[in-house]
Image (cartoon, rainbow, N blue to C red):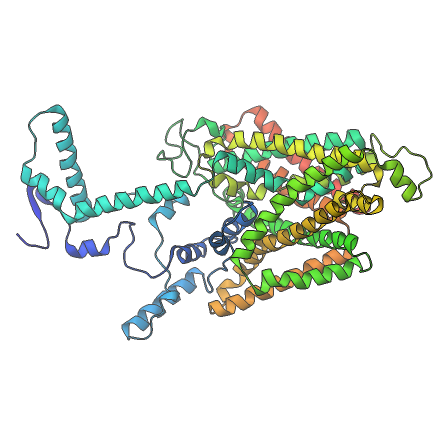
Length: 628
């Protein structure tokens, strides 16, 4: 018998069934399903695979910077890497041809230009279904050998259980278990099990996902909540918070169902949509559609490439607007500490400082530290406002005397119709963050518990919002600033009570705005880099282009902040234009488009109410806010 190939006496039809494939076949087959060998790492492979997807393929990877309060340096490095230069299908073909030609003639290794073959597992993640070939060629010997080995071993187990006489000889069983193909399959199965375990260990638990989601919703917008009551009054502020919290809670659930690929609650399924063995649409209990992993992909599935392009443009515009808001927040807080220096000068100084962590040095360890600052600041603001209101109580009379107000009150109002547009925009900005929901969803160990996590998260966020809003407005009344921390610092400096604590809180807010600016910059910059990457010849040129893009974004957002130095106005405008589209109109419209035939009348009615309300508010509210 030849050493390169074993055959059995067992016949299948008129053909021999090989137990083991040839050595040549073994060399071209790897446990992962790839052929050939490549020096590319998994991170580089993912960057190459991103190049095969339409713009913005970097959004899913980079937006994770804003999804977690604690980021490891290695993860931060992965999330902020620039796209591969020349990474287009045509560019990849040329790179492979160049590599093949250089290899043939013995030139230097250019493996960095070689585009690795895609992972088979990636096909399932992107919803690409493999179909059996329609040609009538003979099946490969590898497949026949594997099937025959499995048949022998399965029958052996069955006969051992039943105690009956085996159908196969000991020689056949020995050849099946000792063949190289059998051990290769065992190694492949073991590798897959270990990878599945690693994937599970990297996933977030229910409590971690809840904390991450709450951290996203309770951002810098929390500072402007007392100003909501100043704009709309006690009743108006409460109504706006409750109403828009309900809208964003419902649309968060809709996004989860769109990611899950089915209009039914996520708890209806007992497995992860990304690991489910059930083919979508194969039976009534299966998911209706394939699962989705990113916000732009939802738009692409629902409305095509143009819909994805429009939504992505709105998302990036929102990120850019946030940069200007952070500049204003930095200028306001620095002005309270150093009042002799103008606010514009403060923002210009900060702009120079921001070039270090964003454009000049991309240090993953620094980014990992910055990611924790916002979480500490959020908790500190909630506690500081509440404790100050409890200790100091009503400070409106004192503030009226300090500001020379002789009207004698009242210093609070119950309802103000003219201030509702501004208040609604501020609330919308505070509850924004739906673009990061897919990152939270896909990172969960058990996505089927997503909706319960959203329910608890919004209860916590609503409670914290009312705590800050009511405490701040009760303490300062109509004298409250559009960032409550500014009122706390001013009051502490004038009364001398808790001055040190308030200065520490102010510095913490400065660090928060600084860290938020840095982290928000990268998803926006990567989206821009992705557009020019096909025209960049090398990675060195790509690094220079990446730094220039970040510098341009810093200067542009600084110009906006100098031209419109109002925190409340910018937040309200972003809330009206961007948040209404991303967090209200789009989730409802995509829900209708993807699952329309399976939705009941009540669900369709709610979707249409959200679409009409969001569209009307975005147009009328923006006009009213600009007019104010």
